[in-house]
Image (cartoon, rainbow, N blue to C red; front, side):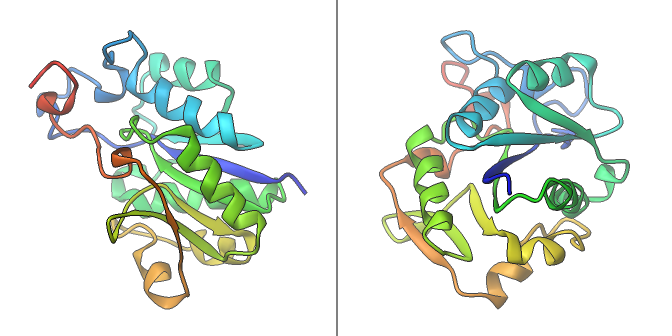
Amino acid sequence: MNGIVGLLLAAGHGRRFDPAGQADKLLQALPDGTLVAQQSARRLRTACSSAIAVVGPASSDALRQVLAGEGCAVVTCAASADGMGHSLACGAQTATDQAADGLIIALADMPFVTAATVDALVQALRSGAGIAVPAMAGRRGNPVGFASRHFSQLAQMRGDTGAKTLLKAHPIHEVTVDDTGIFRDIDTLGDLPGRA
């Protein structure tokens, strides 16, 4: 068994960030110079035994290099343009092939999640939770942890609904955190610190 694996979904097109498709939001610099995708990957790798990053066929070599440089196994999802569910399924199948005990599924455009939050989700899965989500002030956020017993269903995800069907169908263990990063993503240029 290979412990709890981080799954970073990095195949999105970021059309809201740059409708022209020229600027990749995942390669934008945060105030300390770290790139968005780099920080998201780093937080996963800090708490997880290993990490998988799912990219799309059109993802740049620069993005792939950044993710690989942070220790992620980079996997290309051929159908990523058809919705996040396809990327999720691709990553879940890879985790199944690696005999992982669980997955922490994170979004590459959410770099503000703390390593402590990811670690708390890892610990929840290790303690027997089937699905673990971070919550703050009664509101749930990302990333989300899944035990291996859910991998087969995750590997069948399609479209753009992600894992919402699983979250509705199974008990969820809420992990209370003090981390506004679980709600913050980079959708537009104004979401980058100092660029509002």
